[in-house]
Each structure stands twice: as C-alpha cells, then as structure tokens.
Image (cartoon, rainbow, N blue to C red; front, side, top):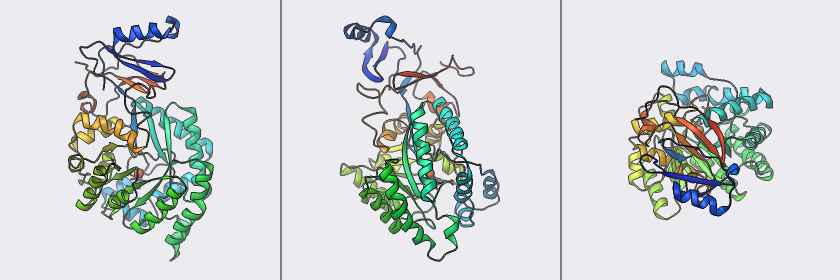
Length: 412
Ligand code: NIG
Ligand code: FE
C-alpha cells in the first residue's frame, strides 16, 4: 500500500509495468534518466488519496443468464439452499437459462458486470464456468470468458467448474451422479485442457452435491491435464473438503463457512510445509444465505493460513458486483482488520489465482494495475459501506476509469 498522505510518494509505470516506487523527486529523476520525453508521460495526481494495487476478485461465476429472486423469498420462508437445489432449482435453473442464452446475450451481461467490477477498483477476477453442465455449454462459457478477457478492461482468470451440480437430464437416473462424474472426467476435462480455455479445475464439494471421493477423482484427472485444483469447500456443511484441498495442494479452498477443526489444521499444515492452500472467504454469500455461521477467518489467520476474499458473484447466493462490500463484510462479520481485508483482496487473492508474480502488489516488475482511491487511508476503504470509492483505475499502465472527486465521500 502506498499511503500518500503526508509524504510525497508515487509510482512510475513504463510500458504497462511498474518501473519504480518511491519519492516523487526520485521518480522524476528516473524519468529523465530513462529519456522519456514529456509528451510520453501522463501524470495522475492522487491528491492525498490512498494508492493500492488493483483489487483481485478471487472467486466469481461471471458468465450466466437470468436471475433467481424467487429463491430469496423461498429462503425467507425457511427453505435452504440445498433444498432448493435438490428440488431441481437453484444452480439448475441458471443452467437452463444459460444454455438457452445466445453468445451475444451472455457477452452483453458479462461486459456490464466487468464494467461494474472495474468501478469497484477490480482489475483481475477469476471467472468460472459451471452453468453449462454439458461439454458444449461448459466450453462455450469458457470461450466467452476468453472473449471478455481479451476485450479488457478487467483481466479474467478462467476456471472449469463442470462439477457444479448434476444436470437435470441425469438426476432421475439412479446412476446419474456417477454417469455425470464420468462425463466430466472423460468428455469435458480433456476438451477443456486441449482447447486451453481454463487454468484450473473447481468442484462444488458439498453434502448432497459431490462428495470428497468424487471430487478427488475429478480434481486429480484435471491435475493430470495441467489444471490446478481449487474447491468450493465446506460451504454449507463440513464434508472434509478443506483437508482434500490440502491433500491435493489446491490453489485455494473457497467458502469454508462450515470448516471443521481438522480442516483448519490441514490448511495450517499445508501453509507450514511451504505449499499453502489459500483460504478464499466469501462473506457476501454467507450473508445472502441468511446464515449466521461465517468462515472462521481469525482462526485461519492465526493458524498461518493465507486468507483471500472474493465476491462469489452468482445469481443464487451472491448477486453482488461489489468487492468493497465484501471487504466491509470481512471486517464486520469475519473480524478481519481493514489491512487484512486489503491484503486478502490483493496479494492473497493474486496468490489464490497463481498470479502473485504478476498482480496484487505495487512493486517493480508487476503489471501496472493500480487504484487511486477517493479516501486517504486503508481504514476508510471498508468503513464506507457499499461505497464506490475508486477515483482512478489504471490497468496495465492505461487509465481504464477516471472519476472526478466523488460526491458524498468525506475525505478527511
Ligand atoms: O459459490 N455453491 C456453489 N456455487 C455457488 C452458487 C452458485 C449458484 O447458486 O448459482 C456458490 O455459492
Ligand atoms: Fe462459488
């Protein structure tokens, strides 16, 4: 974090990368020594605003069609998320809407969401498939993520989540679950790997969805094809998914709202052994599921487990595009400090995506993804609840978003 408040500090970016960080007078000298002519230089005055790396959203289901507002009322009436899924709703209704949506519709929705993320200061986001549940639609989702990535302005890191649920067409068959697991492993995964459209493979490892044994089979098959494992782990009930993540050296174990003591110990041991599994926590989902049982962030942090944050943007359990709101919830509900929340939404989120050498910190050599905030301190980021606080967002050295001073935000 560069807290410009008081000191005259700056960041010099050259050719889309961070070149130097430090006192402005030193940076001016560096510019001269590099021989950059004045017209080639664009100066942005942070005017006392906080400067941070571009935020990294470590968990999203970016590409989907349709909305599921009826589930909110079903939950108010006492139905649980897993009841709704078991009855053929939930994820499965989004699968139906996504399968029947055109590429243009999905791209238009995706573009609007990417734009809203950028407004929040997000410059990198993970994006999962998982609303196709057949080879053709899973591949289509991943190729649309690639189109959105290439368009910018937010970098997207694609994850294959064919094992999100068993599709409707197989659910009535007694062997439907295993038939689907086989098709994920034998039909979907090889094509995903061959087309190079995903970097990792995710599984919704949850009671009543995919158990630990089946999740292990899928993730090992993905790993053999070069896809890094990650998991939806112990979101609603503990099923030993955190320990599986540690066993497989997964990039991250996500959710963890119901993780057991053994699960925390397994993640702590992985961190100790030098191949940490990032715990990616998604508190907006817990809030939206009307649960009071939040992930044990303090225990994880105290056990030495790197903690990241994500929006979990999806139409069922977290219809939010606001990583700022998630950072506030991290403080209010997970009892993280504002600095821990910022680390979780930058460096550790980058780590969860295997991108720590590229983004998530302001240091020479990293991609020039930088946010100038309307507020002067790290503490004020989560303090403004649901605030839109990014004033300038630089992505790969170019100004991707620029606002005048935002009304309604007191800076000091
Ligand atoms: O992270 N739990 C599984 N996947 C998403 C929800 C997806 C959906 O309900 O559409 C999650 O909560
Ligand atoms: Fe999710």
